Length: 324
Image 1: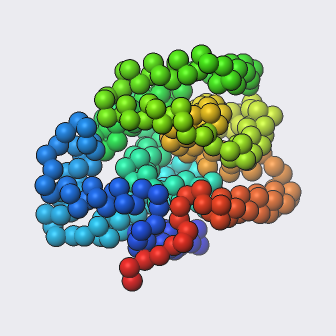
Image 2: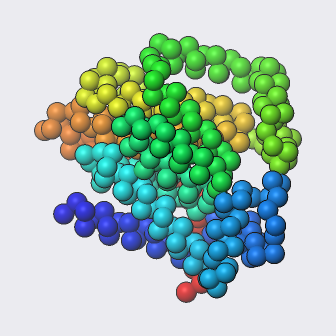
């Protein structure tokens, strides 16, 4: 029953994502890249070489941009549904939170990064099994699609270190203090000095653009409280949860930074995948006879959360349209 339900969900989500047209904030950008790719020679100032040649390959085969979107949608959603199955005993919940936390709708915009994040999600099995060389090889390959994939090397560090609730509290105080001082601007500006020149265009934007609204921290904040309260119980339940908690703590800190510097919101998406795995783990800590109550509350809360964000235009998916 579970696998057929997941397969149907996969088909629906992949179809909605793949058959879209002129939907998403980055649609025109990726359409232009696709159409111009046959005539472009790789340059470090353009998109990554791997992504460029994927576009070239589609053009050589005579496939259009709609075909490209459909295949990318299949790949992304397959990685998440497969990851849900191999990483959790409750894949339906994981896949539900994949949609309602907004990860799914983000894939309508950041195509390159979404491909990378989906592969990393499935590759968490390699972190769990301590196959770090294989994981590193995958990260290097993903680097050819989006340079920010190198952030995933931090996953290996987060696997080994321990971020206790007390340490997380201290780190949170430091981050909140820093982003409210001018020193944070100096630190952020210095980061761009070590990045490739193509990213210098973001240097001025990051200080002009407004950060995310605090409402975006509401559900992650509540989840963070539940994680802290049940920190030791979660680790006792499954040792891999220690890594997922570290990943989530990193995500939350990046969200806090995003309230001041919008660019970090995209960085945070690499770490957001932890929460869709942790939420079902928290449910396991509740007594079976009471679990249905929490299930109902979470379904209502996350449904309202994602519907509200969509209506407010957070993902640029409305109005939805196709070429059919």
